[in-house]
Image 1 (spheres, helix red, strand yellow):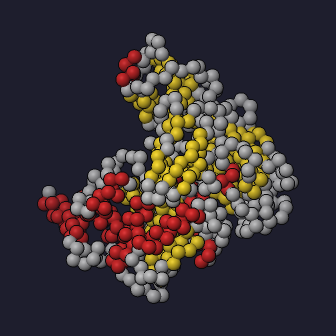
Image 2 (cartoon, helix red, strand yellow):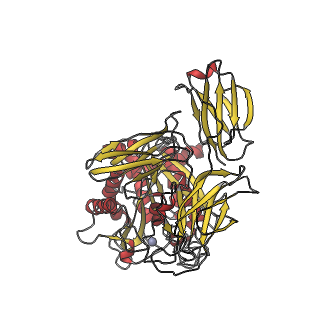
Image 3 (spheres, protein in one colour):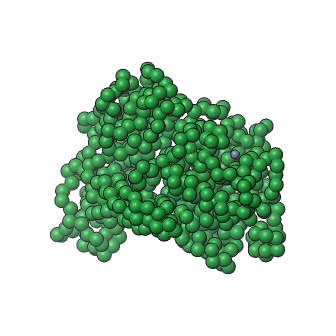
Length: 597
Ligand SMILES: [Zn+2]
């Protein structure tokens, strides 16, 4: 009892001493923390500020150290319809100060919440996540060189969007640290991200693998310039530049976040190695206004909620905005957020099993325009995300990877000579009678063949479904289901030319809404969680009237029927899409549900 009391006093001192502003923004306890102290501070923030700070262990390093993400928001245990910002650091263990700046920010967000209006406003209207140490092995000096992880791999060359084997990694996403951060980002809906480094001084934006402007260049440049203006760096010392203009790199974290998910992502280089002008407190003080500015901007532009027009349930949809990379709405609330400067934009929402809806949205600088989408169920199902692409340094192709997403439309991505892609369908395609999956190629073919593989994991193992050269359908015979598909070019043809490799337009899957009768739908019934893993719950005024509950598979086959209760256990069924039908004396309510693993 005494010991606990004593320990908590020490912890309180550690946290609260920093609120005495005797030394800039950092407080009296402005010392750099070693990695064990970073862990202690993370735990003490969660203990002392449980309403606004939450800790999630997202994975472990090669040497078994936890990878920790902290969330800062009001109602911190609830996923709300708020813009999400990700701040990451220490992917390179040898770089001075990025993790120190992140932990100073973490501490100030907690301590200042009750006293500073700007901090409270951000916490109340945003979800801010910080991964202060992405490479604990490197920071602990486990490898002889601290930059890589314990396997000696530079983690910032190991991500899968335009990975090109620039380091000692055998293949993209080979490292546990990379997989963990990737999976965490895929599980959330970040719309802005900054990855902190040190060694140069500047804000760096995509592309990193080629010198072309990214499709989102107007917005990315605006945000980068805003960071430059709001950071306290002496004028002229803080450069704004594209990654490839500095030097070309493949397989970076920022490129994955932007290329695969449309996150407006940057890296910030805090200071030069050979000329360390600033200590961590000065760096934090200079960068804090720019970080707050970026969090503010994350909520400006276009926002909205995507729901099922029939059930009102939220939908994880692909949001495409004229000429920009697609981004995604949240599967929890259906909310999407995207920064835009003033202008008139065409916004399109699409999702598997739903119609595509388009709207015109007008944005004014500094404002936010809301447009909600209600999508109608239909039979369109196609690949939703491109998780891996390798195009072997082809500098003569626009490499429009996003053309592989959505239904076949004649727009394609040339996957490169011996190049490959991994696409996420967003749901498990089931093996039903006949062909289950179709690869849509460019009609001209260009003589490029491919081999198609499937798996239920992003990282394989991959099982071949056969080869093809133009549009071809395949039967998932022998497996229940598959969610990820890998298309590899056969390596015949020229390499560094426009249109090299197989031309992939789309991957589409069979019909989903078969055999479900007309439903009379109530507004007073909701289903949660959806997607689910084991159990779905029914709630609302109308559930008292219900007599039976039935479960159908996507072909309309009845799987079970029982007396209605307010829970349905589907743990014994495999992953995929199902229909749940509730019957009362005089009405039928049908919901589509997704079972995940
Ligand atoms: Zn670095």
